[in-house]
Length: 281
Length: 335
Ligand SMILES: Cc1ncc(C[n+]2csc(CCOP(=O)(O)OP(=O)(O)O)c2C)c(N)n1
Ligand SMILES: [Mg+2]
Image (cartoon, rainbow over the protein chains, first blue to last red):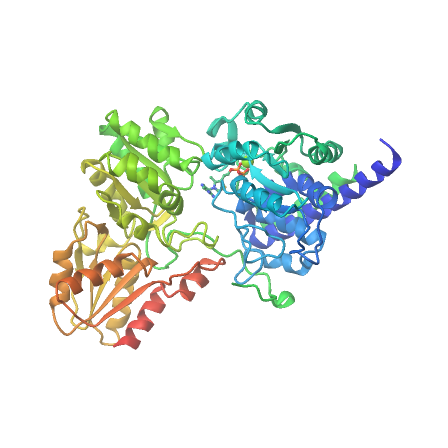
């Protein structure tokens, strides 16, 4: 790795720390929530917004922007963390998360938040929406990409696979799907709730350019997003990111029941301290 | 919707507000997980009962059935369409599946599958929807404001919206005894217990007059019956005498009971439901009355025909007029 790459990666790490901090602030105002997902996917979103995407935070509807679709609405907390870090929203608004009349509702919706391109929440709409936008962008001769974030639980939804067939059939090389493979869904560990493996072989068979990487490894993420954009074949791209729920806050990492976490008031202070300590190394 | 720049710095940290709940009214005893416990009880004597969920077992209380009978529970993953259709398949082999998800996904996402794999084939499937109506602040994706409207047009489907834990405990065995497809809302977690105070028995297709009254007749379903009863008590102290007719089965509708009560002259008739004003109990009652030439003064308490806001539950329920306070206030105004 050359010096410039090293510098870039270390500034990405600073952004990721900020993203995680933002997520803790929001979760603390609620005392509970989807904090483990937000911490786990923070590196993925940091690389998406601070390395891969061509976008203008002060101009969320800029026509030539790359699109970002958040399909699992409950990842709103993760998305707002990076939107604030990137300057779409003021930091002061974090404490309004999920409150009445906030622009940061618990489940992400396009009519509420600048930079939210779709209303998710009813899970399974992300990849189908990307297909439509992919077709539309091609009609407009646009060079923009569509990044669409999915949860691993979402791989059991039928519409995901209908869209996968279609994306390959239409050679939608402007779609970069990103799966947060955190091994957890609502009822428990993903592979126990419904085993969707082998995911790489499935998407390859469906005609995708597939990469599977450690989603908490900054340089692996950067390389994977670069390859996804530069891949020469006319096929949709997918990056399966193996992430660690709670990553960056040691006592939340690997917690068994982590889909929705409630913490005692004292634990939030511990969480900030743990995050501080983890980013020292 | 909420696009205005928010009064950022003035908003104080609220105490962790309720974002989802079964019913948030104080002053009622509660029972924990009435649906799951009733299903476990039923399972003891009925080996043909099986459970299913689409990654929402823990959030619909069927996880305790899964723990009690691990080999009789099918986790389908987040695949609601599959769950509805596979439930039809299980019923073809003689089993009675109780299949759970949130009411919003049960209705919107499963519709065609319920229609063709279940209702048309008279499959003995019990589709159970948690988080009915406005019981979450997550916004439209999770607010099942239209499930009853969606399902009412489906032939051969029985539709139920229970009031409380006491009713849920009774409806579980009643659904198993009734051959045919059913969609029932449920309340989960700690659920208010109200109807045991009213000498009530649940029967599919039957409405029940829970209290008489000479000034107002409330025709209500779901937990709005709890609020109607509480509102009636409150209005009593104003000298307003309120009757409450509870209609847990939306389809087939107990038209006889509704007509009998609505024919008594001199009463304001108010329908009350935790559902959109379109396609729910209110419209069903209005049409029954009109088609039979019964024309009392009629008012409707229901959610508005729009995508509702996200936020905290007490605020939202008040904003959209389905709290007891709003009900009492409206009835006073309408008299
Ligand atoms: C269509 C649909 N079904 C069910 C749900 C309820 N639900 C919300 S999150 C979730 C689990 C999703 O799994 P995953 O995407 O892996 O999320 P994680 O547990 O990692 O946050 C479920 C079942 C939903 N929002 N949409
Ligand atoms: Mg997951």
